[in-house]
Image (cartoon, rainbow over all chains, first blue to last red; front, side):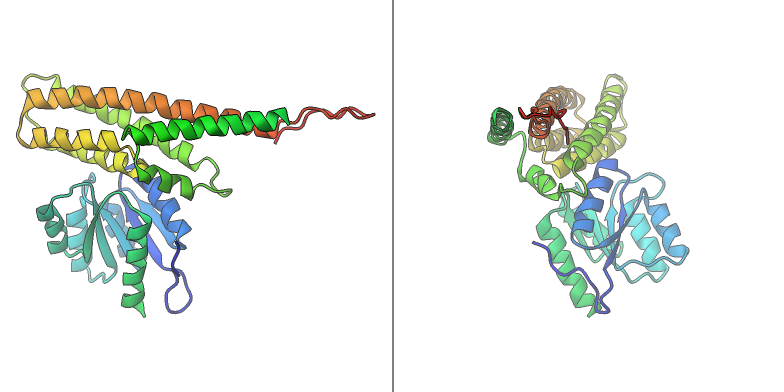
Length: 133
Length: 166
């Protein structure tokens, strides 16, 4: 079930979960920890932007859409404007193609529907290995 | 020996209840994904997540009702945000029927159809109550099973040992 979650240097892949829902925060943290990621969680897009501004970096950002203060597409645009090259994946309960496309237009690499599943994480790991090896 | 049988019976009761909920379409395989994440390092993971879900969902349902009872209500965008959150968390714990009702609710909201939204909200509240009751029943049985499996009767020896709980 679990693929290797280490980057080329043997270090773990790091992931930032950006979501204001405590249920999602808890599930995603445990899910990703179980797959061997180093996981950090913030509650909205502004916190994510501030974290990157402070010098933090992550291999992967899982970005929710609807959040207070700064939503997912806006935070994604801001991160890309800052030059952040992390893999950003929108996570949304909106299953409409037009909205997924908006996330991608904002600069995300992909957009997935919730819930997060083992198959989704495995696919993300494969993409990360391709990107960072 | 008797307690082992009790724990086994309770496990069978848990599995029967879960099968029923799956058969009814109340839960889907995402609930199994959560169970697979539970281990010795997070032994109460499913219970904790479900309780967080119920706490948050009650607030969201209350917000939705608060919006809809106002006959002059028009902030469908705000309602859509509450619905998206409820749908996201419901699907993440495997609450399939609730997620499906949220979809229908959102469709009504997209059409600014207040009567249809009210009907959907009522269905949602009923479904939430049912899921709440059934999952709390599930966790009660699980707790009884853990207790039944951990308590040992004193063995009849020359020196009586007090029962030990794990």
